Length: 290
Ligand SMILES: Cc1cc2nc3c(=O)[nH]c(=O)nc-3n(C[C@H](O)[C@H](O)[C@H](O)COP(=O)(O)OP(=O)(O)OC[C@H]3O[C@@H](n4cnc5c(N)ncnc54)[C@H](O)[C@@H]3O)c2cc1C
Image (tube, rainbow, N blue to C red):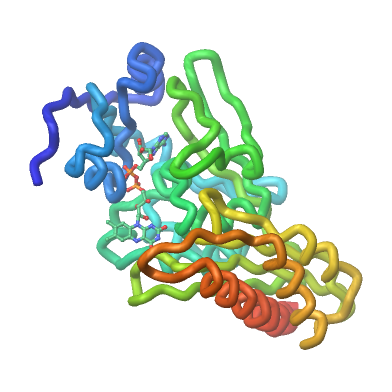
């Protein structure tokens, strides 16, 4: 399918990109890896007047570790993050999710910022960002804003980024010692978007759970955090019964969508199974890491 007619700009730096975005606002689309945007253009589901190609902006591909945060530039390719030792050691939940995104060819072009700006509710990275309380740094001609993950996802394929803002960086808190993680999902085929996915993280101190994080992909129009289950887990020791109860609490209020891939009821059952398995895997993994 051919793309519609549109203007194209490849700004030399972020300032030039922000100038264009400020001028054209939602008449412009930012082109990152193009893995989601190009199909949207081909299908005429997006009709911008101008494409602002940020692939040349090297300043947006930096990875840095400071004061308990791993900052990842928006243009960091998914495969670069997947192969990064800094990511594996400091944000293991992100490292666990990255290999599940599509296929290698997609991850070699797709970017961390692109996935999170696209905000597909079935995608892996939005669930990870929500589970970990990541922070989104957006920039406009007026300066920077930091948006917490809980405020970032604003509906189906929608975020709280303003049209004149560029996502420049995403910051993930680094894992505390004793943290175990798992990213589990059910998809029809390897590389497909998840029917349901789960990001799970447990921190154990002296055998007791001191921090618990659970977030689902694929059960709503935005990623969903399971706060009630998290509260149940903190202060307890890992056990099969505890994880059973957490699965009940995590899924009690879910009202997942139904589509060709599965009914709402099926998704709810899968979600509960993923919680039980994800918590067990995270607990085992925490034991190994501590
Ligand atoms: C066959 C196939 C299978 C896939 N499977 C999966 C999967 O299983 N899981 C998954 O998570 N993803 C999957 N993807 C999507 C892939 O991860 C994309 O890379 C990702 O969703 C978008 O990243 P991108 O860099 O390609 O962004 P683009 O496609 O370039 O952009 C996506 C959107 O984000 C906006 N945007 C991008 N960067 C910025 C920025 N810095 N600031 C502001 N706005 C920005 C764009 O304007 C556009 O609206 C799949 C894609 C394909 C083609």
